Length: 151
Image 1 (cartoon, rainbow, N blue to C red):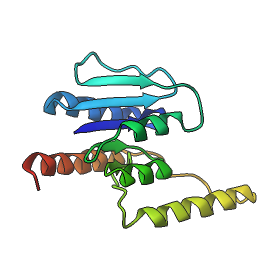
Image 2: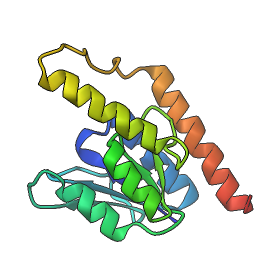
Image 3: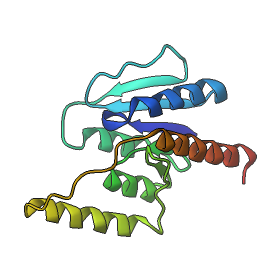
Image 4: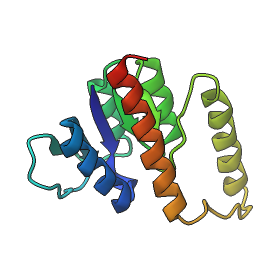
């Protein structure tokens, strides 16, 4: 099992949680980004810089992800592609994308883009909070425990 991170927009606190998990459980974590991402020296953690481009990081993650891998992303279209490959997408706020919910999330995303395109101010997501990072850590820990015990 591998943890892939869509690192361009991933909060630093989430990266820190993943770095600790990688060391504690000896799991491979790869941060994929269009820009240089600094990672601690570890045999379990690496950064992969991809060429600049709209979805270059997403395409690289999709090309490398395997069934059962975890992908940390806030990108709903990427999450849908990961689900198609049997991966487990988790957003930085600790919410799992699932086959049951992804279609609705894609529709809502398209609707919000349409509103913004017509000039409606839709605001943005709430500021990332300590509760969000706790939710992420708890969701990740529960999934990793399930995978370790085979449940």
